[in-house]
Image (cartoon, rainbow, N blue to C red; front, top):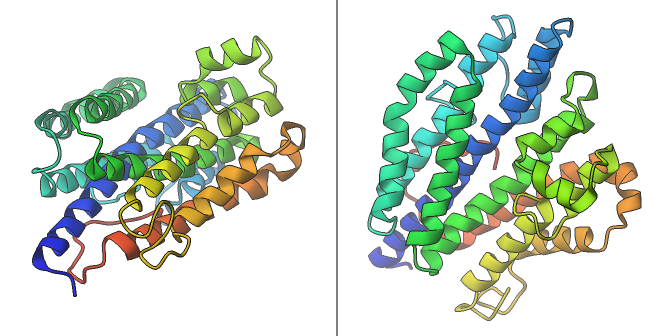
Amino acid sequence: MPTTADVMLSRIAESLFWTGRYVERADDTARILDAYLHRLLEDPWSDEDAACRSLHAILGVAPHPDRPCDIDQVLEHLAFDRDGGGAIEGALGAARENARRAREVVSTEMWECLNSTWHSLGEHRAAARRTGPHAYLGAIRNRAALFFGLADSTMSRDDGWRFVVLGRSLERVDMTARLLAVRVLAAVHAPDWPTLLGASGAVESFLRTHGGSGDAASVAGFLLLNRDFPRSVRHALATAERCLAELGDGAGGRGRDPYGRPDPALLPIGRMRTRLEYLDPSQLGGVLPGLLRELQDACGESAAAVAERYFPYDGPVAWSQEGV
């Protein structure tokens, strides 16, 4: 039976894991909204209701059944809603609460970043309603980048840091897959491939790798398969795999549970990373829709196994965990 200290450590580890996930969720939701809404504003003849419902579906959040689905409703539901963990402000609120629960591990700079971001949201929201969402969504992206930069520069490379990075990496795989699904699974209303590169912060890196060729195969291949770009799925999977292996070092050896069996949290991540490692880029177009779904399933399977192994207490959980 776990001791009180073990329970406290489990709670802290879970808080750190979800802090990383929720900050990354806010960041990536802002990226997807920015790309999608920019495309809608550029094409005033598009079916706004159908496009916004498609955006809700991609992010896994049901639209309000009794209201028209337009840009204003999307912003209220997916950006400004403080009660839903799938919305930007809800995710940031959940990240702040989790960081507060782990204050003895989270650095002062990381806490101040989240706390000040939370308290400035009202001002940014009011400005977005007056002048449009671009500045608001850009501010969210900048603050998320600052938070993770502070995590990298102020936390020791111990298990606390690994749980933050693991949460970020699993969420990044899931949300990058969703970002690609904006184009692949909802092509009628989707932004073009260069817009998706911009939403991923990948324009300059992509151009250095591929030059001016921005066709579908090269963009999708870059965001999925590139080993060096930190927002690519392959890079995020490799990071998550490394964190899980190092977390398991003290319990049965690298990548093993306490009984010497393969770590069930590591198996789906390693399987998908290996598949991408050896995937022929020329075959990507034919397997892409199924591959994106498999990536999201693997993240959910791994997150559930992480919770079962590292957060094994029976106490109440006070925050939402949508999109696991």
